[in-house]
Length: 105
Image (cartoon, rainbow, N blue to C red):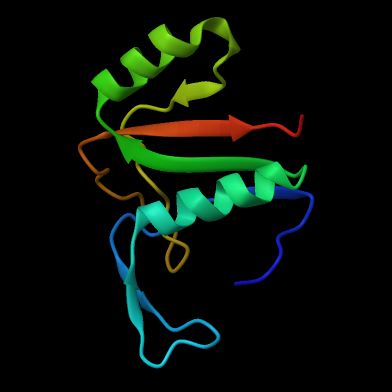
C-alpha cells in the first residue's frame, strides 16, 4: 500500500496472508500474485526490484526459452533459509526458488 525505495529486495510469504489495506472494510486474502503485481508496479516507476519466489523448474526453463539471454532470472535451487530467531537452517521448500531481477529501463 506504500511506495517502495529505489532498490528493493522482495522475499514475500510463500503462502497467502490476510491483509487490510486503506479503504478495505474487512481483511482480504493476499497471496503471491499481489506481491508480483506490486513488484511490477514499482519497477514501472523506474525502481530496481529483486523478487524471489518458489517455482517449478519447467517454468524457469520455458521463461528462459521465450525471453532468451535478456531474461534476468536465476535458479537458486532449493534454498534452505536461515531462521532469524535462532540461526538454524531450514529444510527447504522442496521446490526451486527463482530470483527475478527487474531493472529500471
